[in-house]
Image 1 (cartoon, helix red, strand yellow):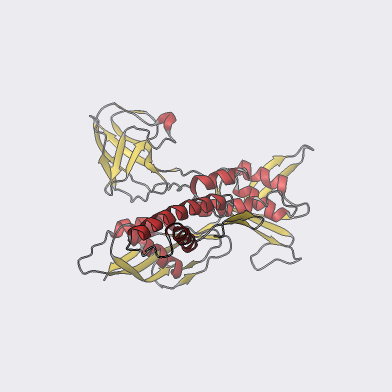
Image 2 (tube, one colour):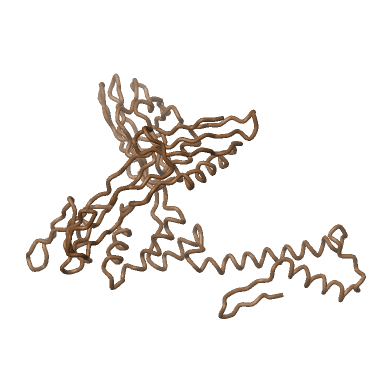
Length: 397
């Protein structure tokens, strides 16, 4: 067997090598004529022992590999990233303004100080898809029409449609009706393993002597920042993106202006100008005013359509659930293009995870509300593509 742990790392024996070694040992004990065929009692016992040894070795290999953050997963990945002072970003809740009509004064219980607890209880309503929403703050409402803030019961992005959150789950005498007259503010799902690994790799540039990588990596660690990109024009002429000469262009999604502005002040290279319509003033120790500049990304909505080919004639499909699953898995970063190869894989994954029997075929995307359907959409500079699942079309063949 080839089990060893040296300067080249951990190496373990394969199952075939373990079986061969055990066969040799059995023959040394019982004689060369022992029957070790797989259908014999001794052969079956040998393979049970070999499989047990293989499982232990594979577990040791998995533990060994988990010391590399790029190969770890789940809680082990959290522990490895903590060494770099990087922590997984938790999800947040979708929020929505709800109009409540009452015919008397009523007090409705909110989650109050337990806002971040997914198990917190309070006055609850739901939409026609079964998504539940709970009152954020305890409210005493007078007779008439009242507008109050609710959050989704589940963490992450919960897609809603105007006028569909109309069913009280908590019955309170005096509440006549509930409704959502405006769009919700979507929440964010918890950072995935893949996203955390990318952010950890970027984080090692924070102390870099090259300011561009260091500034970008630092921005990505700020609370509330969900994405960022940094462009630089080192030439003496305006570049094709409209960035002035010797100028940087920071594009940030989320985060507070104070945090971003202060970080630019501390990290920006001397002599480098800034581009951006968002500004934040900082009074320096010398009494001068430093003006930080950056931009938020623009967005472009995409529609998606595809066919589902039944594997069996009797198969049925929950198209709304498939669309919701796709929404959970599709995420574009600033500057990422959208192509149908990966979207086909995601659509198939959604179908399979829901236990439905079909193939995702003919995936196409549109950036002009369905006027033209293509296989690839490229974003503009500093633009983020957003897939609108609610406007997508799924056809079952």
